[in-house]
Image (cartoon, rainbow, N blue to C red; front, side):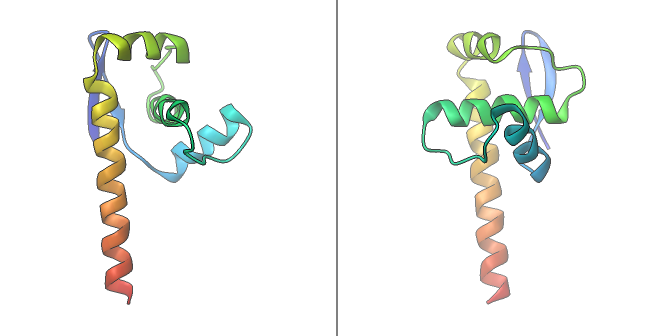
Length: 94
């Protein structure tokens, strides 16, 4: 599991079913990833789902991401790594 630092505090971040469930709970619909905002909301939901002590609002997270691009870059790496793992599993299954 990867970590990100937001406002001098370390948080766990990864992509999982729990994150997708949280996204549906918060947004009221399944994740589609059509818009950049969807990806940032998915990241926010990942932080909510995986860290009991995460208390930032979505707007606060966006403000912080404007200051520190590393947070979203780390989340993009998490998503890319997850996609590569899934593709590898599909190749093994065939």
